Image (cartoon, rainbow, N blue to C red; front, side, top):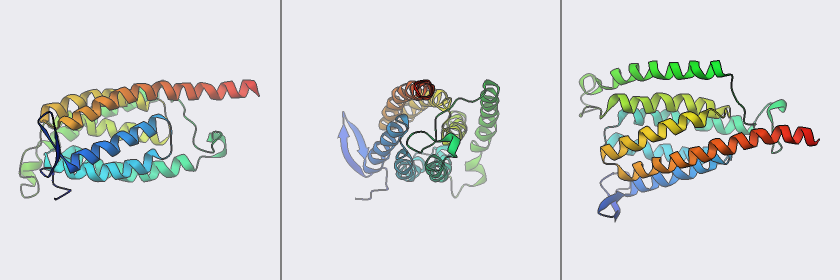
Length: 223
């Protein structure tokens, strides 16, 4: 059994061959997002395990932008873990962790514009990887622009999540819908199911973080 080979089958579900790698990558991914939705600091270490496994899987199904994204996620999971655990005194909640907050609307729109421009740029580059580096990328990138949209917007929303900005979940909702479509299209059905679940969790997370934000004002008024 080669755990890191996407063709090493763990079991079958309705005729779909589930590899060890895909199963545990999805499992740790769901765990990480559930913890994030609950604003739990333990989402970051769970995320570190998830991105390590996912990087191997994405490489083997030629989703190269997603593979590169995992390197970024590995670094930001470490940064996010530290940031949530070490807020400034005025940023701390009752657990001595970083509070959730909204950002100015203009700043949010600027981030969205950066995301669109970044998608076009990265998608163009990704479509040429097999020509520039044929020994490393022996097959063309699958759906380079859709995949690049997921990459670029995931980078942006992860930066917002590190700061516990509520708007990150609006972007995650959009990413999860697109990713669900992409993975089913590519045949990575379990990853498609994972992102469908992520869509539901993101909707809950948006509601939960807004509720937590409102609780700060309630606490102040009660005091």
